[in-house]
Image (cartoon, rainbow, N blue to C red):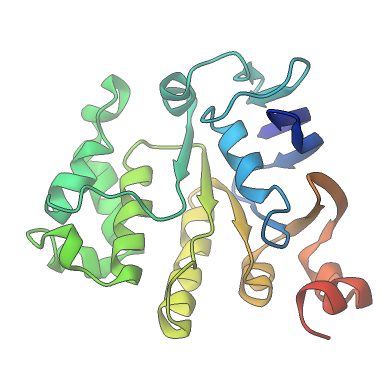
Length: 235
């Protein structure tokens, strides 16, 4: 289980995240909802070690403390981030991008098994292994980015705005694949503006405003909440 407590981040004088706390269990999909600039990406980057957080913050995964580790050690501990914008190696093939996910000593021996797991979730990639990643559609590139993260054999998968820039059809295809990841016992934490589809596949959700977690409930209750409907669903 991923557990985050008292996580705060400053950019100079600006307090971008204040005392954030959340949990993600194995096999659970959790979404963090918020407007642009609310602190969603800052939260997920701080959890994955890409931005420094203030003293006192605590991040743990299955009781292993992560908050003092560099980002590559956090990946080795079982936390994998799919960043906003995907950040693939656009001149490399799909196969080469996926293989780079198995760079850790603990993942190399199981690379073939991990690749089959990726193909079971995204069958299309098996037919595109020799294609140059930069020539793929945005949705296909997102599949490669998630597949590359899965090659690290994570316990928790972090997704930063996975639907950004995708068509509604490709967004639906992507979100239909995510429960298959959770069914393998991997916890999934999504920060996302696509409220309807992210809540539809999630068990729980958090609301973030101005850097603060202001609400938490089951996805079902959040979908029914008048306040959430007004703020995030256009109700």
